[in-house]
Each structure stands twice: as structure tokens, then as C-alpha cells.
Image (cartoon, rainbow, N blue to C red; front, side, top):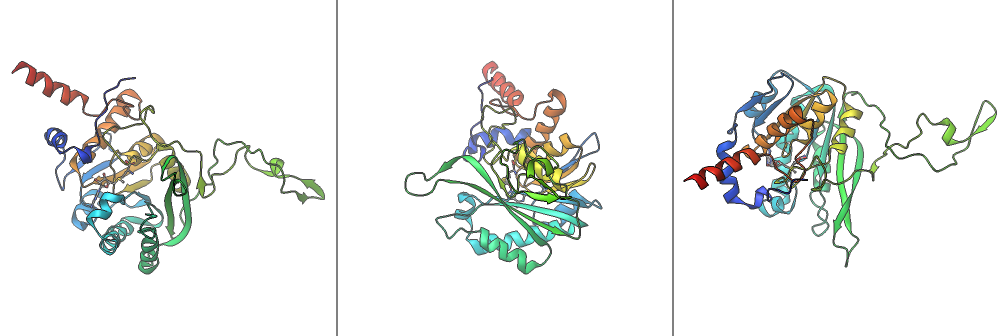
Amino acid sequence: MKNNPLPRLDEDPQLRERLLPHCRLTSGEVWEDPEGRHRVACADATDPRQIQNLVRDDRAALAIHDPPYNLVAFDLRNVDAFIDWCAKWVQLSEQCMSESASFYVWLGADQNQHFQPLPQFMILMQQLGLFESRSFITMRNQRGYGTQKNWMAVRQELLYYTKGTPFFEVQYTDIPKILRGYYKKINGRKTENLERGRSENIRPGNVWVDIQQVFYRMEENVSGCYAQKPLKSTERIIQASSQPDDFVLDFFSHSGSTLIACEQLGRRCLTTDLDPIYCEISIRRLEYLRESGKSGWQNGHPFEDVLERDEQILADE
Ligand SMILES: C[S@@+](CC[C@H](N)C(=O)[O-])C[C@H]1O[C@@H](n2cnc3c(N)ncnc32)[C@H](O)[C@@H]1O
């Protein structure tokens, strides 16, 4: 395994300065996939003009949004300002979606701050009235924090909303059914759940315990990114709530997880990030997948070629 990770890009302004000249998008620009399937924009999720440039006349069957909600974001904004900001991109997203569509949002709940912004966001969604609430999913992380004086915080929240009557296909996990019980009489014969079920495996339900958090040993790891969602979680959403060739919207691309899962599952991704470096990472990750079949760089990184070239130039000078 190559051991050449990038540090967290949000904490390294000097590295950012070195990478920016190698980013092909600047604010407002859109990258067109040469294979004609996806588009990546360097755009603000709350800017109607920039989002229109990305989405055009296409309409998404599914949106998966993972906005910044971590402590950095909270330090920068109070919760009311954060919710006003959310209202803008939620409304824009709805305008870019089909009459029948699914809308998923990952959101944190700060246990030291009355679980903000989760409850405020739920109330916002109720007030906007654009979507029906469908499920409140929790994904369990392997690693947590706060183990000594509190319950270890290991959850990630995922809200599922719909409008109209969108496609939904039940997904099964790789976890075998092991518990017997739930006897039911069918045609006079007592049957039990294992023989009645449509699958040998259990459904994920709304608590997901079978998804590995991304870490440096995994092929899909994109070092430099600080908020990468596991591909398995994105794939689960895409398979449940969209069909081949559907458009999938993601306003907060970062490491490009939605783009990569769409490529692998034959969907078409329309995605954006405000930061040109994350746009470049997303595009490079797609290109790398197509060249090598790999979904990430494990403990290497997306800018190996350009940084090695820069270092060679400096050494030659
Ligand atoms: C939590 S990360 C998304 C992680 C992503 N789901 C993944 O798996 O890699 C949030 C991203 O939103 C981007 N962002 C922040 N404000 C934005 C805005 N107004 N418009 C678009 N992107 C924004 C940040 O640059 C960051 O890359």
C-alpha cells in the first residue's frame, strides 16, 4: 500500500495554494463528462443561476445532500443563519427534481448544543412543505468520541423525504437472517419467518450497522478529504431510490462519493461543490475509476502527479 496521504485540506492553506492552479474549474464553471453521463460544477448550492447552469432542463429522480454541518460550520454560523441557508438550497433542489422524487439529507446533531441543527432542520422541512417525511435513518460509525463521560457518539443521521410517488425498491444487507420466530399460519400450516421471507438476508431498516466508516486502508479512501461518506451508504440509497439512467443530484460533492456510486450503478450524476479543489478531486476520482477500476487512492492521493512534478521543478532550479 502506498503511504503518501494528503493532510486535511481544510486545515492546510499552503497546500491549498499549491493545488489551486491545478484545478480545472473556477466559480460558476461546469465540467462536462466526455462520456456524456455526468456534470460537475464549481457552484454555490444557494445560487439559482449557477445551479441552473449545472442542471439545465434535466430533472433528478433523487437528491443526496451532505451539507457542511460540523463544528467548523457551527463556529462560523449560528443555527438560525444555518437554517436560513438550508432553506435556500432545499428549495433550489426541489425545483431541480422530478414530480416524483426522493430527497435524502445527512445531518449531524450536536449533543452539547441541544442536538442542533437536526430539530431545527426537521421543522424547516415541515414549514417548507415541499416534501413528505418518510424515514429517519441512523448509520452507526465504528469510531466515536466522548467515551469516558458520556455515551460514545457513533451515529450519523440521514433524513429521507419524498414528493409524489417515487420509485422505491427494498434493499437487503449481507447479514443473514439468524433469528427465528414470528410464526404465522398460512393455508392452515404454521410457518416461520425464515421460510416466509423473500431473502436469506435481513433488510437494513432505518438503523444501519453494517457499513464500514472510510479509513486509510480502504481502496475508496480519498486522503485530504475530511468528510467522506462510505460508498456503500451512497449505493444503498441510490439502489433503493433510483433506476438506471436516472439523474441524481448532490450539491456538496467533496470527495465525489455520489458521482462514483452513480458511475458504478449506471446513474447520471449532477453534482457541485463551492470549493474548486473538491470539484477537481471529484473529477479526478471519476477519471481514476475509469482508468484503473479503483474507487479511490487508499493511502495515496489525487494530486500525486502534479505535486511530484512541482517538486521535480523545484529540485531542478
Ligand atoms: C460534508 S462535505 C460532503 C461530503 C460528501 N458527501 C462526500 O462523501 O465526500 C460538504 C461539502 O460541501 C461543500 N460546500 C460548503 N458550502 C457549500 C455551498 N454553499 N455550495 C456548495 N458546496 C458547498 C464543502 O466544500 C464540502 O466539500
